[in-house]
Length: 210
Image (cartoon, rainbow, N blue to C red; front, side, top):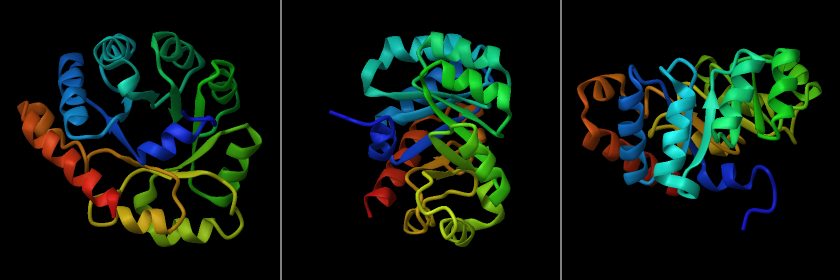
């Protein structure tokens, strides 16, 4: 049984960052991801009716999914997502009033940062996890460099994470990775190719098992 707030995140390893064109597509994508073994899922607020999507996922999958909400940019979104059933909240940046609301919900709070100064701001605001975004700009080598001055910060790189480099991200010091378009293809979602999404999930899980 997880004993710490980040245990479930560490156990999952991969967070599928989901941006879908419709709420129905989001739900079908989640079903496909879970079938492929990916159970940590972030529903972004760029998805239509995100709170309703979160509620439905809770009904369908319950505790089998570690569920969060992403692209949180206002306090209202943070409270709404938590009320709907999100267990973790993710913001692309580190804004004091948004961070305060995220923490106030009691959810695991992940704040976005890229530079050392931004990492320090995220820490000062109380982030449980620092989301390195967009991680594709520096790659695993950049995360490794950040760990020099910040050896104890829980980092989750997001952006530029694929099956071919996922091992390198963990070697560089990530506690988990966020995978969006490289994991959940927008084309597959739009085409309703759920089997392709399931296969992608299996590929990511296999890569993580390394």
